[in-house]
Amino acid sequence: MDVQLQRTSEDGEQAVPSTSDLSLPVFKLSDLGTAGLKRWYRLYDDHILRRAIEPAVEVINGASRFREPQLIMAAMSLEAAGHYRDPLRRPRRTLAEQIERCLAATEHDWSAIGTEAGIARAIAKTTNDLKHADRPNRPNGVELAVITNLAKLVMRMQVLDLLCIPPKVKQGFTRTNAVYQVVEKFRLNGVQVLEDGTLKREV
Image 1: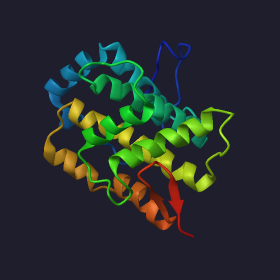
Image 2: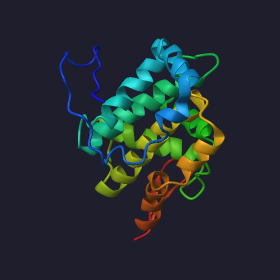
Image 3: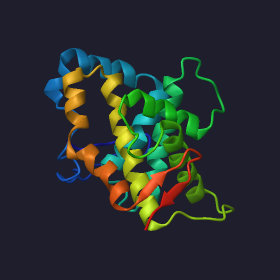
Image 4: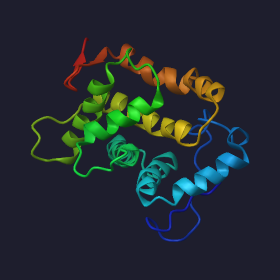
């Protein structure tokens, strides 16, 4: 379906996303059901969660084919989702802390890449290295590719528990190529995430 965000773009028909972008959906509408759809509407009433959803929709809808803005928007989405997940909604938490909450919420085993804390720091560090001109190092193409794809995957997986998707459907998605390929790219490129968020590459 066409996606329009009134707050972030002018009214008008937007291009439908490429079918290749949506070939491995997290779940089907039939998995959501009437109760799940009602829950979605209730969740979307929360302005903090909307701040997580809208950048995610922009990425999925193909707002940019460049990895840099994709990563920045995915990180914005994860930061807002992490804040939403914080029971106390504490201000001024680090980006890495918010992303780690999102990683934990997936209940997925990320150990082939690194620890949840290390991965969260890596996504945050790569994002900040892009955003801030005073950073001495800019991520190279390989680092940017694997981290961007990982951030987008974690972002997509947030809906699984938020919408109370059945465990069987959730487990089914984690076994798809959508997850496997993201993790496998780290191995194929010899990239390992260290605990401090540094990306170590074995050539």
